Image (cartoon, rainbow, N blue to C red; front, side):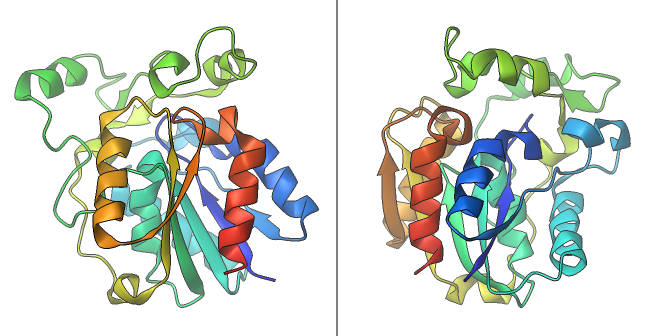
Amino acid sequence: MAEILLVHGAWHGGWCWRHVADALRGAGFRVVAPTLTGLGERAHLLSAETGLAQHAADLLAVLDAEEMTDVTIVGHSYGALPAALATAHPEISRYVSLDGVPVVEGQALTHGLPDEAVAAAEATLVDGLALPAPDPATFDVPEGHPAHAWARRRTTPMPWRSLIEPLPPLPARFASLPKAYVAAAANSMAGPAAGRAQAEGLGWQMVVIESGHDLPLTAPGETAAAIARLARG
């Protein structure tokens, strides 16, 4: 059976996949859910070099270290970008964007934002390196939701370089891989909305889940079921 590599989004870590990973393992899949450098339990590794390219290198290293084969890679939100770069690995066989941002060569996550908005965000950086995590309601985990307190405890500042670093040229393999987009019907964020529009325009397989943006936290069962179906082809 195909193996699954789960890639978390901004401010999150491998922790956010706990319930999704448990469900997928219960369905018989081998699942790996690493934390990207500078986030979660690896926040202490944050440096000026921590960005998109390093996060892609994290994933390639995990694929090798775990000796993964026939891998469906799933990138949530920001995670769609390093996941796309990780398709350079020959064992990646399917690419799934989970309410992910657009995958556009040469474009950073901050693309299209007013200069004053970028400057205002930069002024709040922790040690000049990382953007503080917003309230979980920002990514559709409202106050009062069972996962809200969990997200408040576990989210960590996001490496700034990863948000302003343009996406390098995509691996040649990316174009030919089967691709799918799992959309959150109630997403309120502009980046994932643009990612969905891109996927629809390119004719990717589309799955829609009735939830807000943070699908691993607010709809883990439905998310696991969608990933399982896609991984089985």
